[in-house]
Length: 167
Image (cartoon, rainbow, N blue to C red; front, side, top):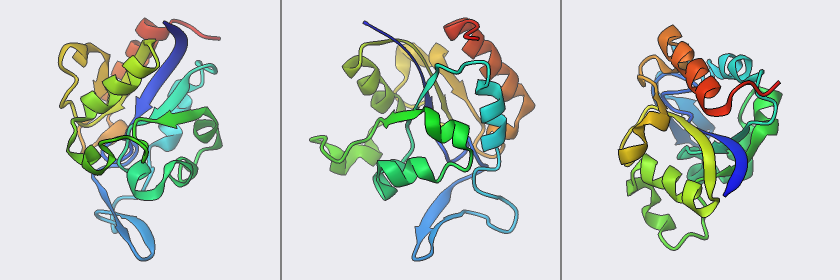
């Protein structure tokens, strides 16, 4: 069993409202006229500030689209980038070509089991595949993301319950 403390983080519907898509110019918001990508990254950084040892694992389709390093590096907050240690997706997985069709919870639980994690949470707008571990999921409404004050409070409480005070 591992003593690591991990938060799995999705991007679309969590760190910004709605989705995003890839163009020749890069990844853009599904509604660039009203939604700025990573508009809630600063909020997540502030919520995680009391947990300096917490690791982030990316559970976003951005890793498959851009590769791990580029997906990590698009995070606009240095404190968040520094916490990222891995991703649920890897191109070397046998089923990498089907990864998008695998439930998000299944992706997360594979990582949890492979790394023998005991202390973990997931922050996502999808709940498919979490099954018996729904209590470890802090779910965002994709139209509000982490901009929803209720979700912010739920995340703070879940972090405290799962990881205690880390300072």
